Length: 274
Figure (spheres, rainbow, N blue to C red):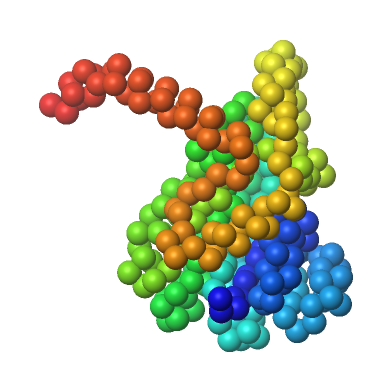
């Protein structure tokens, strides 16, 4: 199989780093971004000129375009573009500040949007390419205490589904990777927390217990390397794919409930037609 050139945001740790390693280990080339490229120094030493570290804050649109251009100029093409940079903002809806909400969207939605826009001209000109958006089971379902995170991932899902239809005629694929719970620091060091309101204390405790049951057996991030290679090598890659065992059951229950409720209220839907 021909070697590929990857562009991965948020590669200092977690999925981004594991996927960069998976690509590099099989002989591919990778441009990887991080807010601090010191975190990528080991990969430079190990893989030489097949690895290009780029300092980037994805919230900066101009810098996003410059980073993609630098990667393309360095390697001469882009085959796989992965929007992995992001974080989890915790807090009930009433607790969140304007800044916390805007910051969540700036990174999780607009950062991915700008990188996608920057890469598309190169992919269209090549007549090939694969954009992978890192979403979440929280991108198709929603849970208490991460409502704004859910909102950001639902937005990512929406524009990416539209994008897939727009770029298919140019030979460009789009895949939304939707992980369940994994042993990353998503809920740890990289997470942010709103100032709590005492009125929600009991509800928040119940939500925390429910979350524990959802992620009782978190996945192993190192195992996702092989999975991502399967996706990028597929002749017809999926628009959506779960990572982990548990998301499929959550999705089935959620969507069954939606359909049942839509059907229950369909007489009102027809009434509204006029």
